[in-house]
Image 1 (cartoon, rainbow, N blue to C red):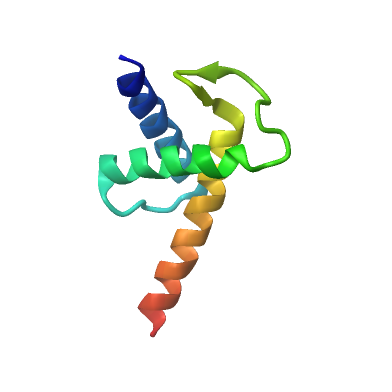
Image 2 (image 1 turned 45 degrees about the vertical axis):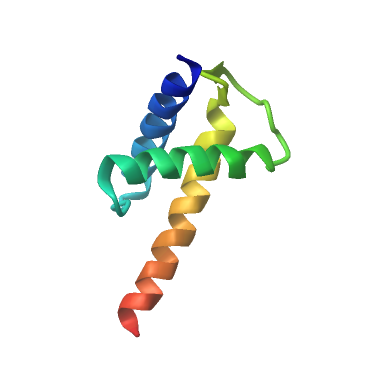
Length: 84
């Protein structure tokens, strides 16, 4: 049950980060889940690792900030690839 909650939380965080950035995450819902979970991993390396609430084993604020950073990097890479 914990993995399902983690996937749901990752999807919501990835979706919210995509909405804030105004960028489309490739892959739709699966892309949102991946961005949210990878953002959580990326966010765990930020200086304030466990800042904020933890839900489903995911620290919400660092995961959200990590997702924002991940979406920014991915959209920059895809933008550069489109221009080539």
